[in-house]
Amino acid sequence: MSQPRHIAEVILKGFRRHFSLFSQMTQQAKQRFAHADWPGLQQDNANRISFYDLRVQEAIDRLVLELPQHCLDESLWQQVKQHYLDFLTFHPQAELAETFYNSVFCRLFARKYFHNQNIFVESTLSKQKLPAPVASVYDSYFPVQDGLRNCIRKIVASYAFSLPFADVERDIRYVIQTFRAESGHGRHPVHQIRFDMLKSVFYRNKAAYIVGRVVSPDGQQPFIIPILQSKTQPRQLYLDTLITDAQQMSIIFGFSRAYFMVDLPVPSALVHFLKELLPHKTLAELYSSVGLHKQGKTEFYRELLQHLTKSSDSFVAAPGIRGMVMMVFTLPSFPYVFKVIRDKFSDTKNFGRDTVKARYLLVKKHDRVGRMADSMEYSYVALPKNRFSPELLAELMEAIPGSLSFEDDNLVISHLYIERRMIPLNIALETASDAEKARLMADYGQALKDMIAANIFPGDMLLKNFGVTRHGRVVFYDYDEVQYLLDVNFRKIPKTDNYDDMLSSEPWYSVSPGDVFPEQIATFVTPQPRLRELLFQAHPQLLDADFWCDKQQKIKAGFVEDIFPYPISQRFSRRYANEASAE
Image 1: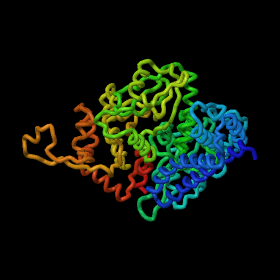
Image 2: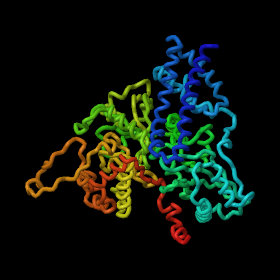
Image 3: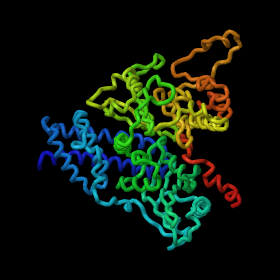
Image 4: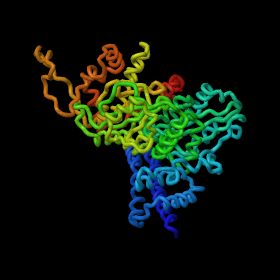
C-alpha cells in the first residue's frame, strides 16, 4: 500500500471511530427520555462536545507513531488528500469526514499551508453531480389512504416510543383543530395533502420533537410537535402542541439553546431537509443545532469567506460600551461579532485569559435554555487587512497585540470567538417605547430566572451584557464572570438600627468571597429608576435571597425545571383548557 493512501486510511479510520462513538451517545437519548433521566441527557450532550477533539488527537498520535518525521511534506499530503477524496465519493458522512481531515492537517502543519490544495477549504461535495439522498431521512404519509386522523395516528405510532400515551386520540384531535385553524393547507381535501416526516426524533432537555412538513397545492408548511411526559406515575406521553409559526420554529432551532440529540446516519440529507423547512437558517446554524458544531464552524468559515468576496464594507468596533475583558468588532453587512480576549484586563477583573476560556467552554457545554448565545471558537483566523477601518486597526493593536500577527495582506488573530450579533439591551432600551421598555425589562428578568433554573449565575448582570435578538428575545452573551449557581452564597443584608451604618459607604457587615446580596441587584443592574421599577414590578422575587436559595436547593435535589422554547399559551393544555375541563 502506498504511503499517501495509508495516511488517508488512518485519518478516515479515526473519523469512523469518532462518528461511531458520537452516534452511540446520541442514540442513548431515546433511553434517557424513556426513563426521564434529564440530568443524564444533559451530561451526554456536554460530553459529546468533547468527543471530536479527542478523536482528532488520537488520529494524530497514531500518525506520529507510525510515520517518520519526513512525512510532514506538503507534496506528499496533496496526494493524501486525493486518496482521501476517493474514499468519500459515496460516504454517508462525507462533509464531516472532510472537516475531520482538515482538523488533523491543521494541527500538523503551520498556518501557511492552510489552502485548498492541502485541505478542504471548499467542500468537494458541492462539485459532485451525485444527487443528495434527502429522501432517505424522511417518510411520506398520505391521508387519502386512511383519512386525516388515522394518518396522524400512524405517524405518531411510527416513532415507537416505549412509553404509552395518556390520551393519544384527544391529542390528535387537538393537532387537527390547530392545523385547520393555523394553516391554509388545512382547507384542502385529504387527497391533496401529503405529510413528510423526518424519521429521527429530536431530543433536548425534557422533550422529544417530531419534525415534518405538510405538502399541498399551496406549497409546503413546516411543523414541529413537541412530546412531553406526565409528572405523575405511571409516566405517560402527550403531544404538547403543534407549532407551525416560522418564527417559533426558528427559535426552537436557535443559537441560544443546547444542541439537539438526533440520530444522523446521513447528516447532509437531514440538514438539507431542515434547510427547506427553515430557509432563513444557514447551513452552519443547522449543523450546529443538531450537535455537529465542528461542521457548523466549517460551514460558517466558508460563509464568511464567501461574504468577504461579495462585500466591500470594513470591520469596525461593535457598537456599545467597550468590554473590560473582550475587544469586540463586527462587519456591518454580516450578522456576527468577533470577540478577542484583551491582553490586559481592568483591575476589577481578578482572573486571567485561561479563566475566560474555561467559562466560555462551560457555557458551550451547558444547557443554554434559550438565554445564552452559542459561540464558535477559532484559532489563527486570517482576515484581509484592508477590510479593517483605520480606527479599529489602531484599537486592536493597542488592546490585543499579543493575539495579532500579519502575513502578507492578512491580519491573523490567534484566538477568537464568534457570536450572532444582537442589539445590546442598554442600546435597545434607549429608543424603545414605554410599552417596549416594559416588555424588554420583563424578558430580561425572565432571562435571569431561566439561567438560574439551569444552575447558571451570570455574575455581571449589567444590561450591556445582554442583547436583543431579531425575534425580540433577551439573551446573555458576556461570560467572563459566569459561574454555577451552586457556587454562590446568597445572603440577605443584615438589619441595623444604627443611623451611621445606614449612611456609610462601606458595608457594616462581613462580606466573604462568593457572597451575593440579591437586594443590591436593583442598584447594580441599571442606574435608571424607571427601568429598575419595571424589572421588579415583573419579577419582585429577584430581590429576595430566599428565592435564589430555593433554586439552589431544587438543583441540588436533581430537579430540572420546565423551560419551554415556545409560548406557554400555545400548549394544548392552555389552548383547549375549557374543552379539557368539559370532558
